Image (tube, rainbow, N blue to C red; front, side, top):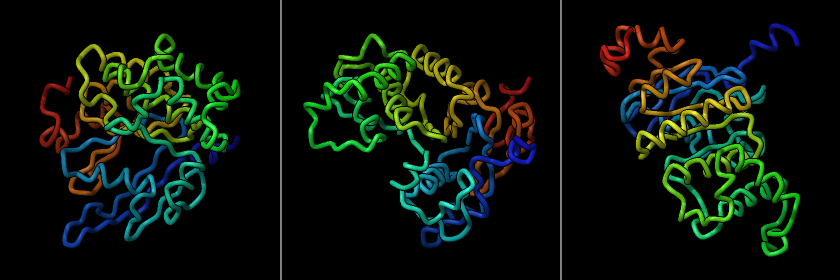
Length: 256
């Protein structure tokens, strides 16, 4: 592999603009995400994080600019095509099938990725080609002992890990984690941080998170959004010491 190939970003956003009437939600935003990185995006409410994720997923088309993913221009491609090309998202509000077991939830994601039909759930429920990978994924996310428990009986933190397991089951090249620590207590948050750390390098991760301690613990690169624009992108230590970021978002507690 050449040096140029190594340096080529997996995801490149160039000059993205999105308006909602007079509101400029995404303001000429440019950033890149390198293969294997955990790239975090931070910023206050209203900074444009959700609008950005929605554009990445293909549920909202930018007014101008481009999104290049794995060497392909996906700016105009719909969400299902982007999913098949390797973009998966874990939702801030979990999107589970509540009465199905954890195993059945992940089997559905495996089934969708393999292109199986959903019309015959009963035989699919006994399909070893679905069961084996689903079991392995659940073990990886720390839910090996909860495979046969209904999703709605899991704790909040366990549901978040199940949601990520369903995203992982699609074998993504890019995993979008939208507020993975939202609503968690200290114990569950620590477990989630440990889990994300455990999959470092296995997936390229685009992380949107308000917990600054988690962000600085996990991220290789951090982009700070402000009013729809990228204020700065840099290494965690650089972001901690950036005077405008410190003044606006962090305070002195994150500066050594």
